[in-house]
Image 1 (cartoon, rainbow, N blue to C red):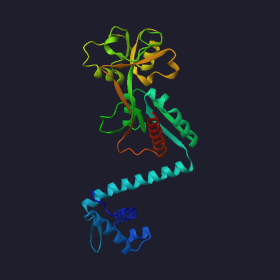
Image 2 (tube, rainbow, N blue to C red; image 1 turned 180 degrees about the vertical axis):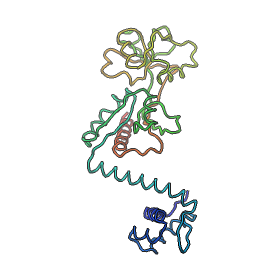
Image 3 (cartoon, rainbow, N blue to C red; image 1 turned 120 degrees about the vertical axis):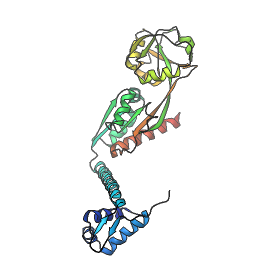
Image 4 (tube, one colour; image 1 turned 90 degrees about the vertical axis):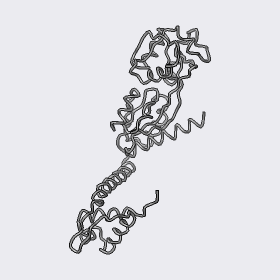
Length: 304
């Protein structure tokens, strides 16, 4: 695509003439001479290859193309002004609220260090985190109630920009004293006689597992269902059974009681990503935290 030769002053001149329907009055508003204003409009029309105004000796009127262009230019200038004011407010006052959503395991593994640094740099900015299911994270971002999210759903949604940050393997979670706890890996066939605890069918984690195991001849029997992975792991810790869960869901504080052994044949994986809505302009504070997360995760990736 060829570059169109125009600048911000040309757009401001166009809006002024369109709103005044007069070169003379618009020139006065902009503290320009009429010839200088006319040159700006001519330059813009030449760059676009269309006529934006129908001119007579008595009046100036927008063409049909000009009317449509005016709507877009106003939106663009208003958006630019909001962005500039937002950055100025962030720099001058460093106040406001950042709202984002993430799946619970991301809170422990990805957020603490970044949030510490962000809070040290912007102590008066409040951070609101919605730790929700993957589908709820996606819904919050789509609804504009969260500026961005960390989730493993959304990659197929045309309204979502999905930036992969971590590929996570599923493990078989069990008590540390379970007979299989010392294994380096486990084939699914070796586990079908275990008492399985699972999240409900409505869960995104369950969907990942069901899709991965669709070609497996014999499926594990599920003895108990519960809505959230945290509840599943509590039941595993009690000795009620075993569970196939994402590896990151077993938190360090639980590892004295619960261990996770990688599952193979098939290996089940999910990709966590930073999700944001296309054409949604993040507030400056949210963009700053978003960029800090990306930088932190990239540093972690290079270190592994």
